[in-house]
Length: 78
Image: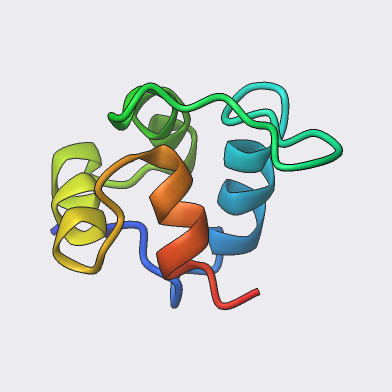
C-alpha cells in the first residue's frame, strides 16, 4: 500500500515549503500568492515524495484543502 501525504507524513514540512514556494503557490510579501483553485501544484510536487497522488488529493479535499492554497491554510498546522 502506497502512503498518502498528510500532516503526519515525514515529508509534510518539505512538501508545504515547496507548495508555498516558487514551484507552487509562490507566497510573496503581502497577501499575494498564485492559486488556480485546483491542485495542479500539489499534483506536480507529490510524486517527488513517493505517495499516492490521487489518494493524497482526496485527503486534502476531505480535510478542507479544496485547492493548493487551502492545503496550506487549512491543513498545515504552522
